[in-house]
Length: 288
Image 1: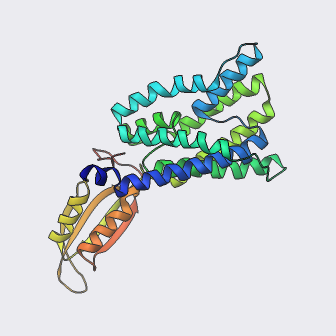
Image 2: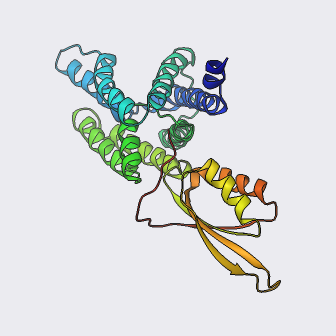
Image 3: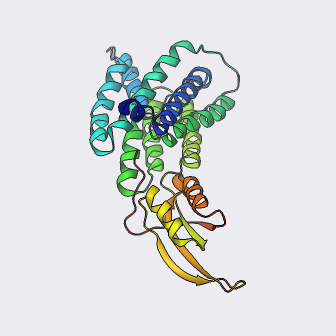
């Protein structure tokens, strides 16, 4: 009974829904937009396909799926140790579902113009990646590396991933088609912007909390989060009553839950949220 409750808890069900939706949207994008525009995918999948294409150009048959497995397996095993087995399991599930859905979604072109396929495809593809990331998983490949670095340093490297993809696509353009490589780079730029817009796990905010129920709010907050919180004493200028001023830095990913927790402890709490452009010191990252 306890095992069943542990496996089918809210967190795992949310992640399952996220990776399923992510895989479905990504399969739709690849079948409807990317194939129509003949775009090269990014990341390890792009590397695998490029190696297979270069092999075919040289008269050598190279299975792209084997190359993809050889690239993903060591990185997945590394992340299972350094991040979490749960994160890797759901990431691999997303890749499996993507492969499954891709078999059933037919190639049905919607737009005849290349640029429309690139724009709409890039938006949906980027959102599908962000959906998996927000659920506590990834789409595999270079996402493993990006999440490991972000989890270790607290800084996102999506721009670095985009630069890597540009180099990959430049090689593709040199050997095959500069025009398709150019469109593929625009596609990757749009999808990267979508990821950085919707994936806010490593963006931090400061909360200024004003409450007359200091002990209740502190107890609830510390029971749900591992972030530090500073207590200051204040006086209401209008009422003249004593007021506790609490300061805490949290990730924007956890912000909504933090607000709900404190409002349950004190329905009259006042919370001011400001963006934190730079944070120096130790910060507890939410577990994946």
